[in-house]
Length: 605
Image (cartoon, rainbow, N blue to C red; front, side, top):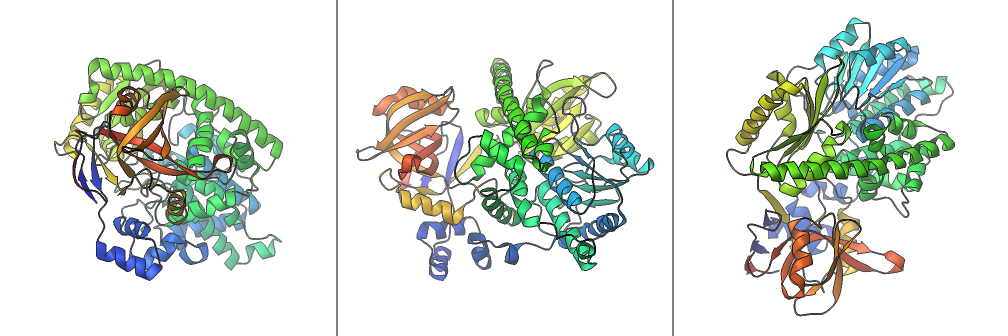
């Protein structure tokens, strides 16, 4: 398969997935795999000795030793001693899904061990991201001698130093970008520590937290803690549904141990005993077996909505409660919050697009927008939508009162391949341009004083330009296969889902190109989704296709306006459709190009 698409309607370059034919043949012979599955494994560089565990991961065989994480052995021993000694442990967690799942998991584990940990989730509006001194004092006043920070803390040097001064032992469980110098915590576990050689950098914070629970559980087992206290060992496998939720929603790479966690967690979630998850599945109207899509687009947004528009700790409380009635009440509250969030986000995004178009900000290496009337809880979502719309790194800044009473900018950035947003924000903070800053390569956040925004914008533009080495941020899309509409059979698509799924960040769902298709009956459904039927150009069977949130995009407009007389090459995911017992295939369109002008065909396979 080889072709050229240099400039699609979404301003992307399409390239064929590379795969060595000899390696493909070896995989087919050794594992009895169909050619397409073997080609995907080869193209995604799955090593020959890892194919079995990739296709059929097992906890007993493939779960890594938590003690390979730098600092884990000492941290686990410290927590185990604290549990045995009955020391009061407080939990401080971030307000997003990863923070909520990490905090609830840790709270459940400590409660199982006989402790009653106070839980603190910062208010997104009033406190912003990360730990603060006031929160640590509140936990200390609640009796905490030890505070475990989940999904934050790796760059909170000053706050942690103040916490140590007031007598707290502090453990940091994080996965954000780490600097050479670690914060002055009692223990720090982060697979992105510079001295960490575990190879587990793909873990979300909930994964790091789960690793700690596994390690502490093992140490308590060794000293017969559970036996002496008449307790069963912690039901760690039962909690993998929580870990899977945080892993998917934090968009960390779905590779290595994360793939194992999500597979096992989805199986557990289908029969979950967690009252909060059950209530959330019910209010989200999820039927059938949960999928990564369920977690990322139904459950996660509702948990996040609490901190965005109402109360930050609702998600953690939901996932840690054992009371079914409390769980139902919280789940419905989160559902209401999510409806409010969607309406607020739509208005904020429309305003941001007006600013971008009016000032032609999409021509810059990085889009930077902000407004004093925007909601800080929605800045990341809007930045993500801007990145998707314009194919550029995007930063959105909203404003809220800070700890000192003045206004602070609360910014979020979403990036594209080749631009490390977290590193850029850390560098800006070290230059004195930000009060706080850090995160992941693709998603990061910061706090800024209003009078620093101009200088920060100039700094960030230069930083992004330098990362791109002067090249425009043109996205490159890897196409897994070219296929006709008539060739996209249900059994084939279902086989891909069963063998290669679950899909997510770092292990994306395969992209198929349907060449020279005819578009029939294109229309808008909902507010902004484009629906159509497509067939091969010469006719034959038709397939349903959807382009979500695309009505005002170049792809959506082309599908709606060009009619059935314009041949398209369509790019997207092929999905098995079993609605009402049927077995059909539909395409979720991600990009398109006019067939007569957008591609020079060299070979079709």
